[in-house]
Length: 582
Image (cartoon, rainbow, N blue to C red; front, side, top):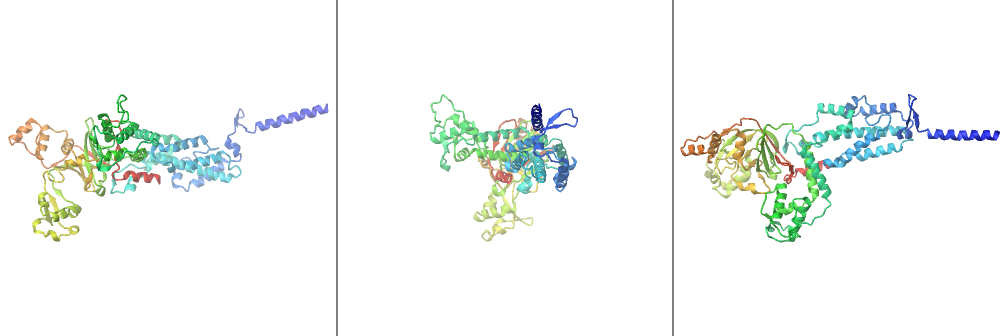
């Protein structure tokens, strides 16, 4: 009987011990009504003291000027750690930061790997024997993660780079919005409330930006696709309709990959070695997409563009997504002119009107056209060109030394202290161009370098939009050829845009004022009768016309869905990409 009693007692103790082991992960809630499973964190760190950590964290964060402002609004309570590490919340920000490449941002701009490493270390119980080190690592994780959330939200809202610091005020003179105290106050409030939602909400959702993201992903999927390099023999190459070559086949294969070309399955030329109308149309689609003039043959410059790797386009998109995050402080007026330096293009738009689009010539690499913002102040008909001193010394004085008729042939006159000087009275053999001390003015007329119309606006660079007698330049692919001003292809149409709404008679008078034929029957009749009047040389716009001269190597055109690419003629994309890497 005693043995049976001992056996029962042993069995009871065995089951009691087993029950204790099974229940060691069970914590009775304060209400005593239910049981809750203890977290993995609580099992790894049973002695963790939330209050002790909070006090330590508050003392630590108060020394950080940025974080102190944020956490002071939350009584210095951590965002990612309460009574335990909120791994779900931390994993959410890791997921967002891991996908930063979708926005053209290098992953190393954020400490994603460090956040993940510390989180995994804490979660796996690495610091279970060292509570002090655990607190240090948790504070480090909290600080690192919150700063990443702030940096991400600011960057997505206003850009990760400051273009004025990046390029300097001489190359970038557009005022952009930046995070101010009002924005920061709201940002800190939103991050305290829900940091993940705040970060997601900051991501740009504009149609152009989303198109760039989609294109970036498309090129990412294609970057490992190999295509035969097209042989380029420089200026000696030129394929025309009917020409046959393996190079033409390589061109067709390249355009098949990116979708400009869709070959006719019934064609007998299965290798696409003959340049036919269908393939030429695809090449012109490619050229239009890349801001090149359309043509009836294929030359060296087009082949050079076709040979670019897909990574080139990803880099272009990266730079322009960052540009797109720079938000202009100055708003467009109802009537607005936009000059894109990289695309050599001007677009003038007015609400509910057909946009005016034309080619432009811009400053050469040595005389860059600055990016700027302004408003059209007035138009000057039949302008006189006051030649800049640098041009007078480096170019005109040199030309006059070689050809004594240069000044007179180009309707130019010399001035000294405001008085005209006879050019023939100067011994040009003794003139030192670097010390040339005369002012030069070119009289108005068709030979004037400014053409017949000049569009003036306030700026600190002494640049303006103007007509030009050299219309052939607008047929060039690279139109970075001026001394910094912007030459416009259709100055009369731009003048009509600036003066509209205006009567047909006013347009006739404007044309007559620059020695062009009037358009209307009435205007032609009045001119014939010598009754058509000219208007003054200074025309003031009736309404405010905003102007931006900017630099974008990816852009859209009004009422079109496609993205267009432009060459990085000034190398500004490279500067942005290098800065992002750093």
